[in-house]
Amino acid sequence: MSKHNTVEIESGPKRFDLVKPYEYRGQRYDMFVAREPKVRDLRRFLKVAESDSIHAIQVTLADLCGVDEPVIGEASIKDFGVMRKWFEDFLQDLIPDSEK
Image 1 (tube, one colour):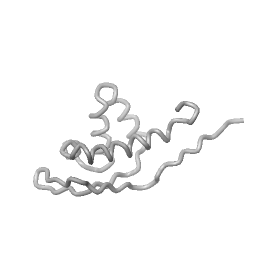
Image 2 (cartoon, helix red, strand yellow):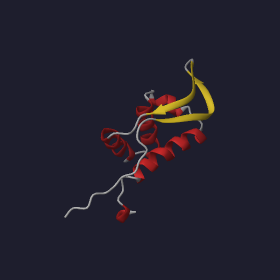
Image 3 (cartoon, one colour):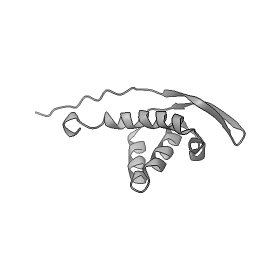
Image 4 (spheres, one colour):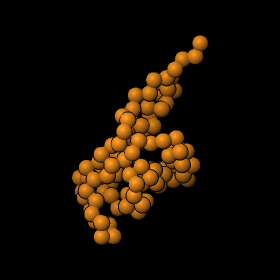
C-alpha cells in the first residue's frame, strides 16, 4: 500500500507589497505578483543553486513575477527576504515530514 504525501501550499498567485518601492529603468515597482511555482521552476532553481543560491532565488523570483532578473536585483534586502522566505517555505512543503 502506498502512502500519499499531502502537500499544503498556498495555491494561486502571491502578492508582495514592497516596503521600499523603487524605480528601475523608468519603471516604478511598488509590488510584485508571483505566480505559483511549477516543476520547471524547481528544476531551474536547483540547477542554478549549485553555483550560487542567492542568484538562483533571484532568477526564480524574476520568472515567477514575470520581470527581468535585474529588476529583482534592485529590490531592498528586506523585500527580497520576504519573497525569498515565501519561495523557501514553498520548497519546505515539498519535503516529506520524515525527511525534515
